[in-house]
Length: 139
Image (cartoon, rainbow, N blue to C red; front, side, top):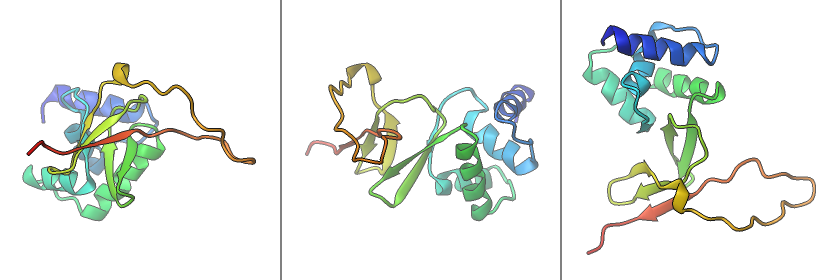
């Protein structure tokens, strides 16, 4: 990794108060080292790390992604109630889920209009609204 990528990754971790351990730096560089946002699964990030010859376990990847989410560096987007994607863009925005590729991408926020949400049941409050638009290629 280049010096610039290391600096971007280190700054990303430090803004959340996370220590830059070797594993965190490795994964942070893969996630944000080039300054671009990513949608990853734990498995795809694990494969990317292995592909660069990094010695990191899948459990470590899961734990690190969870720490990044808890620190506010990433958000988790759950598809089908079982498959989690992790997004480095933490601003509220909708997603497209490409069913035939099992891939998550950003959808244009300026085209989404939600006129009104239902009232939360008594004793509850709305914590967040996730919009995932499922797509499939036309035949």
